[in-house]
Image (cartoon, rainbow, N blue to C red; front, side):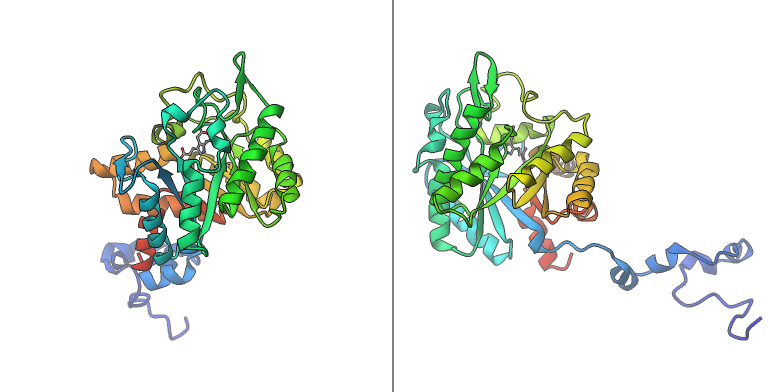
Amino acid sequence: MPSFISKTRPIDRFTPVDEHTSSEAKHRLPLKVRLRRNRKSEWSRRLVRENTLTTDDLIWPLFICEGTKHREPVGSMPGIERISVDEAVREAERAVKLKIPALALFPNTDPKKRDERGSEALREDNLVCRALIAIKKEFPDLGLAADVALDPYTSHGHDGLLYDGVIVNDETVHVLAHQAIVLAQAGADVVAPSDMMDGRVGVIRRALDNKGLTNVQILAYAAKYASAFYGPFRDAVGSNATLKGDKRTYQMDFANGDEALREVALDIEEGADMVMVKPGLPYLDVLWRVREKFGMPTFVYQVSGEYAMIEGAARNGWIDGEKAMMESLYAFKRAGADAILTYFAPRAAEMIARNH
Ligand code: PBG
């Protein structure tokens, strides 16, 4: 036996405490590989850590409502508020301070302005456009994304045009292209079609290019599932009360994985700059497959219902909210996400700044 190994001494001073107990010594297994060795202390865990969450990974979704100096809680999303445009500018300042690269804006449109065709979506002075203009003016370097879809504007709560109980595809796509131009002209850096109509990315790309808006990026909600986890979001934008039926004729069936790859492939072919998987945690397999197969900038949306579950449990004292938040965000990084849309963005950024 080489002299540096003694039978009696503990292996080294970093050995887990229970190794020192006599019974542990008695039962010692002749293991060459012990994965626990690298986990024995925080400095070592830091060195071998495979993934890191930084503020560069975060996009912060905000809900905008009418009024000034106005904030109102979203009942099903504890800690989240709908805020007026001036308040959104203040949150934008907070995002800049926290080094969050981008915001995503969603409107709670006045019910009186909602109609069958979602016409408000095409008005240059609608809520989202006013928010885009106000924030861009103060913080030109902050990235701004806006959804392309009609659901916050239609009286029936669907993302597209509804004729005789059917969400029509091609006519909707033309309206969406128009909406994308309106958003881009108001200052959206990124337009994010979340409607799941066929062919919309290509038509939106051409429409933007024809207007000279060639630098506006398209973040395609490429694999977006028909999900019960969107419930609190629909409360926040006010489309739950009026939503007729469900969205299963356009959003994906949650039983399918391969189909997500076909959706993503099409959106890439049509000109998407980034692709997104949504919801997040229940679809980590899809996220992983998309990242592996296409190597595209791949985003994930930790949706409202996921936020509500974590935050609701935390506020009941059932789980440690901050820890569960971080664990869920790291899960996205591990599964290959380049960026995460999350309502936790400012809190996660604060924790990152404190070095967790
Ligand atoms: C609108 C849209 C939805 C979400 C983002 N954009 C809801 C839906 O499709 O019904 C969900 C986001 C969330 O739940 O946080 N098309």
